[in-house]
Amino acid sequence: MKVTKYHHRAQFADLDALTARIRDALAAGDYILGPAVERFEERFAAHTGVAHAVGLNSGTDALVLALRALDVGPGDEVITVANTFHASVLAITAVGARPVLVDCTPGDHLMDLDQVDAAVTPRTRAVLAVHLFGQALDMDRLGAIADRHGLAVVEDCAQAVGARWAGRRVGGFGRVGCFSFHPSKNLAAAGDGGAITTDDPEIARRVKVLRGLGQRAQNDHVVRGCNSKLDVIQALVLDDKLDRLDGWNARRAEVAGHYARALAGTGVAATPPAGQRHVFHLYQVAVDRRDEVFEEMTARGVEVVVRYPVPVHRQPAFADLGLTGSFPNAEAQARGTLCLPVRPDLTGPEIDYVLDVLLAATGHRPRRLVAG
Ligand SMILES: *Cc1c(COP(=O)(O)O)cnc(C)c1O
Image (cartoon, rainbow, N blue to C red; front, side, top):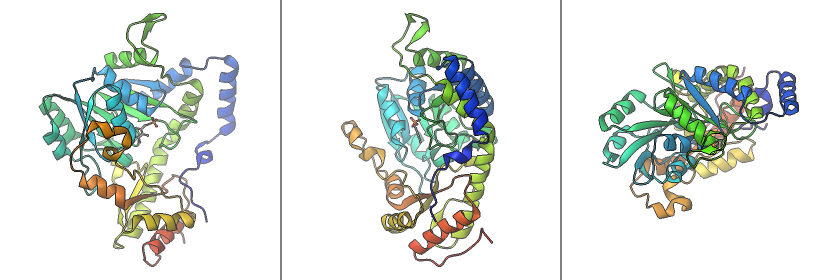
């Protein structure tokens, strides 16, 4: 059996209807921004529970433009977590600010909020809060820390679209929420795409100016912006999928529940389901001899991945930054975890096969809990 990490075809309910809309858009010739993008922006803002969403080229651009809209720049420090994806730290450096890393916790591998408090200096302007793997951070605690120090919170929601903390969606807690619609993410475009969300009309306005080469009106360039606009084809694809996102996320949590029950007591540390807090973009397990387990599972057709094998503070691209500090939990996570396929359309036999292969690779007997 082969169990892949993505199955993009399964995400289209009515591919003919969608391609008809794309064909119309191609014929009409309005390819960038316009009514289709505005419609998606409005529906995505409503889904997130905020007043404004602004469609962009990528999640990376969303992070960069969020920081720029908040005037974060040279001389400022931004706190983020050492086991995040490269783009979170890259965005901080792209605006000229200094990334300050904190470790993750050993349990859920999310940003250690006690360390955030301790990392604040007079130069700290913002916390880049990463809802890593699809799990919402404790936004009550983080909000209290940010308020106490007068910091802006920017949420990196790239892996957590649809996740909730205390009933409210991520992307609606900070000054700005940043989303990616890269094809690997839970809400996937047919190419690159991203968005910011905010309740602040001034931030939405600024990001719109920045994404359009800094133009306030045509030929009136008021800031040095960039070119980062969502295109119509991506907006049509995203708009088509948005209604099914919550169902997919619920199904991912179900798959996670099967994994967690089957792995209980085996010594493989598995992530339990966490209600609406976790949308399981990735399903992490911690295993001994990770690289061998990875090789064996790959050889038997299970597409496992490691997110991320080299933590940001050891990436050559950041060598000049002196990202000092001790991040033992991020190091352990990079060394000892892998991610199982957790696509919403996984079948019972596929879930059982993943478990069989994982348990065999980690020296356990198979346990069938899903398929009859
Ligand atoms: C994917 C991702 C990004 C970047 O998104 P792109 O759309 O690929 O630019 C940023 N942060 C995190 C945590 C991500 O997983």
